[in-house]
Length: 107
Length: 114
View 1 (cartoon, each protein chain N blue to C red):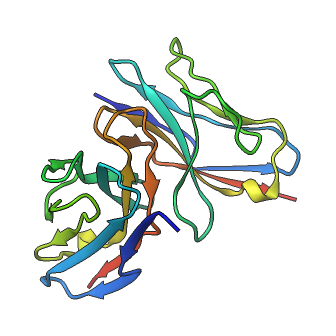
View 2 (cartoon, rainbow over the protein chains, first blue to last red):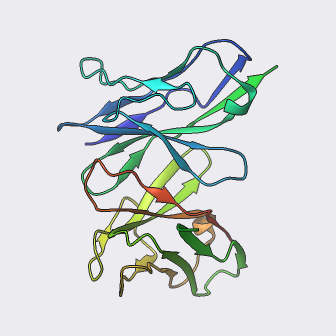
């Protein structure tokens, strides 16, 4: 069965500190993984996807098939990064979301 | 501006009433989706449609129905609302139903069932 696990409900870091939001998945096929972000009072929006191997707003995520992980990383957190982050796996017809991690960056 | 429009923004509804949440997109996307977002549970798929005229059940379809008469519209209906359907509902679309396609989301509808 497809499953996405985000073990941390809440992650609090200081501005300028590195941040890593964890995501592990279980999927029998070749996974298509995404990170979505929801800022306060805004709609859910795509942050990045593993297939494009890009860096958006300083965030990167590498697919590690051996560890079945797709952790989101940023070397220096900013206050404007505070938001809800969802890892998602496309199971072939729709997205399977993790329960989300709320990131709080404090000054 | 192209995108997804959901209506209403919020609604308070008495249990047992019928309610239709509207979703319209102008991006000519083939695939559309309905999710509910609940605290501690993330987003869960209710129903989806890969193309006009077809629909499929997601993870939590019970108590909900959808239709896809055309490409642009994908309404979600609660035939007889119950308090457990209190949630925030998000409509989304993607160019196709292929797994590598990102989804675009609406602003959501906050629904409270009393």
